Length: 407
Length: 64
Ligand code: HEM
Ligand code: SF4
Image (cartoon, rainbow over the protein chains, first blue to last red):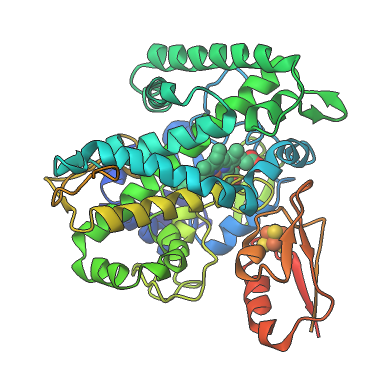
């Protein structure tokens, strides 16, 4: 691993970093630690050039300064390439707050709690399908279908179509670098389906489901137009699935590899919810997202120019030794829970409460029903750590158990 | 001890509600946090301090 992180005589900091590359994916935290320790605000010439912020203070400050660091261009480096901005993530205040207000009530802690029985129901059904066999793929057979089905349920879409949504979301996100046509086709197909659902809901009375809220949403006093509606709908599918599924998979792999951790969690399952925040800090599935600089400026001693892209690394901030003691250790007794796994500022994750609920339900169900699960071979990461740094396939074996409806 | 939530900074992340649901509640309509009690009971002061220091927007202010 080498980043060549350095500051030249003129005080300009530079690194060699391709966050989409195989090297980075192999050891992202080593890269991030090295960069942070040498020059926490540094420039890479990859992907058309971009800055990366790796210390907590810089990430925090930039994320809260939407005036200087805009989300409107793209939150990806290179840019996401969708034909229209994805809402509300590729907007700036005051539009951001107005757009968030449309769905905020559906993402409140209360709404999440109300969905929990349904999450347990889905989990039970999914585990029933494989528990007698003694083996499964924890991601493909459990975390992915659960998160996708919960989101479709919230949207009031047909839950049984989850596989087609999962396939298209994966193609849209992960084929972008390898097969652009396939990626565009998947995005187009989802937008068409979202448009059909929009037509169905338009003339009906507004209901409390997520998509009806969006279809009947307003911006600056005007109803959202069709493009805005489908681009908002698209983010519901993009934002919620692989992040939550992948995060949970990261935690399951950690548990499988650390007998002491497993013993501790099994000893007192009532203490599980208290561990959520530290797991989130440690196993964050989202390495970082981008902003663009709106005017020439000096930020933390570095000269930035209007239009420069900047990657805010939540994952690096989460392990800043200035803020977290022994940051590379998972410490379930840690009191400091100020991780940035969900970002910070105006765009902080809308789904954070929902993600916690889904994770806690999945953790509880797995530890209760297949507590002795073991990895079979090496689990497989998503191809591109810059999109999702998480496992996408986790084959396991366990002592076969009984279906919940067995008599 | 009293506590206020700056409505212009609060983004409705509800970390405060998670830590002290008897003191903070996010509004059903606008999603922002409201303070439910006037004076914080002494045995809840530490929970409120924790909530204030955890708020990602630094929207919670403790008044002595
Ligand atoms: C562990 C799981 C999750 C992680 C790590 C995560 C991470 C993030 C991050 C870092 C942001 C900030 C974006 C930025 O600053 O540019 C964000 C925004 C967002 N997330 Fe999540 N997320 C998760 C789960 C979810 C879920 C379940 C949903 C539900 C649909 C969701 C929906 C959104 C939306 C809509 C935004 C955009 C908010 C805005 O632009 O104002 N996320 N997420
Ligand atoms: S934690 Fe802060 S931002 Fe979140 S709801 Fe409470 S006061 Fe608002």
